[in-house]
Amino acid sequence: MIDTPDNAFQVVADLLVAAGTFGIGMMLWFAGEYVLHRFAMHHLHGTGMMSREHLEHHVHSTWRFSSTHLLSWTGVIVVGAAIWFPVGWLISGVATGVLLAAGWAGGYAFYEYQHARAHLVPPRGRYGRWVRRHHFHHHFGRPMSNHGVSMPLWDHVFGTHESPERIRVPRRLALPWMLDEHGELLDEFTDDYELVGNDRLDERQAGIDRARAFASQAPTD
Ligand SMILES: [Zn+2]
Ligand SMILES: [Zn+2]
Image 1 (spheres, rainbow, N blue to C red):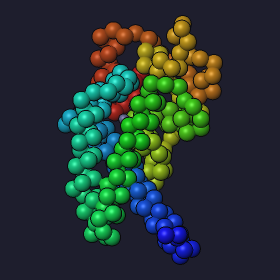
Image 2: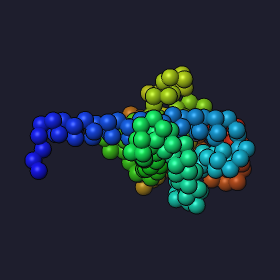
Image 3: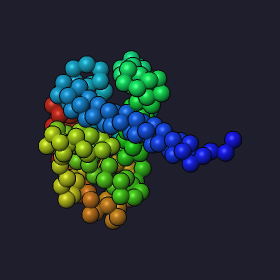
């Protein structure tokens, strides 16, 4: 059967509503990302597994896949299925519930992907540059700012957004992609970052870095 214009308009309208519902689900995740990162991770100073794991991430500023990511994924899927699916279903049927929950999980996937890449590989494009500047000021400048990792909306709303001209990075915590073979900052990153402090990786320095990370304070130089 050939679609009539009316049918075609209906298909386009349905697709737009579906995309909008998925987008609302993603926005729900970005709000969750801000709230969890600020309150359940940094304000708790290491009380509970979520806070402890995150503050350990601040101690070394490295990223690698671990079993806690599977736990996080499980939590995200459970919240999507137990909260956002029924909410969407009640508002406008099963499809809305599925799209809202899928958007929530999609937002989480986007966040995990961007966060991992920020730590592991150099930026490509304006967004990649922004994510890294925003997140590494959170790591090294002021951990109680820039709680949204993959989007800045809620930091602007709650007054926790900071964007200094140059991000100060302790040498011992510098991301590998920033450095040349001598451990110095690559020229292409000197507009955005400066290396400060020492590069000691001994136990005393690790203890200082851990204490400051668990107090949600920036590492000393
Ligand atoms: Zn990080
Ligand atoms: Zn953090």
